[in-house]
Length: 506
Image (cartoon, rainbow, N blue to C red; front, top):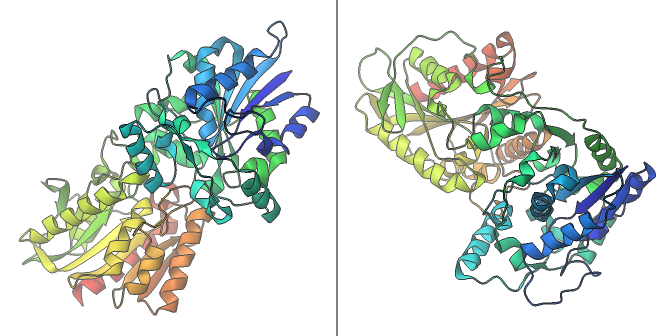
């Protein structure tokens, strides 16, 4: 028999599992929805100070109620914040735990408090300030009904369930978010399953791409003891699809799930696959964090600056400006008589858009200052997560910016990114683009979450009369240069490049 011990996210208690637990029990499992001290009505606070250790103790107590003489296997399930007390408890009872399920949550590390995974970046900064000042007592007020989206996608939740979630929400003790998680390392022997909610912006394919980038913390996800499931819903699957969640949990307990491909397993990672067009082997000219590919042509030439996506882990090697796709685009521009420019920027985390924007602006000025570049004729071309960086240029286009292009871009913050109120919202900024030409390469098989941001951008652009040209790749996926048959995407790449060159030379 499997014993599921489940721990809920912030502001929510054992009640959120009320539709999932009976389904697990009907399949023959024993279920314990842990009541957390100071959050659940059944576990009122007995002291003014409640911290992460308090909740770890709550989970350990649930583990210790399971009969050690039986052959029942314990599976710990942590949802969002709940993974922190789950890991703390599993680290102290590793021999009792058969599996840990990460339910739409981060990967907590030793010494790092749960505030590091708070989606809302403004709130995260405030919490970090409180932690630094040692202000760990008190409570965080739960969201209002229309504020839950700041903590994760509410996709799939019915109005009634959202009403119930709001009505039963409880304040979260600050100490649970500010106290660092302490792990001895014993928990690493416990098999794990990652359960990803795709409407919250994460998929197995995305995790595979991150693993392929070689970050040591992420490469561990390709271990044989790690499996993954996807749920096509938002951050609260116990409310939006309890039957699907229960089925996935039962399968996870049985050791099922998809495994990731280890780095170097014979398949080249997507970001290192060849560029789909034949381009001249033009050498690079490196200037600080910028590479220039200069055509053999007279006089200063217009330039196309290619801005990679992300986030890209800081330790990734080679860095993006050396990836075949970016180099290929720059050489393609050079073949058209333009100076192709690639760069590295510091978008290593969702919280890094500010400094990435600074890096891009500095790279553009470095390129414009080069005597081989016509400083009055520059285009910017953005990719994927770099799409949010278009907002600054759309809001107030400089006179020298003759065109802005984007390939499979993300054009509004995704659910759970915590960028509420930030300026990086191209789907709004395009209303201020004026006469700036925008060339948008759209992937026909884009993920629904990203496609929604593109559709919002296109709608606003049409409503305000922006100069938008759509170049569709009907069967293209996100990152189509590295994923799809070259013959299906070559026409679109040629078309888009010709459009950009025309805007630069007219």
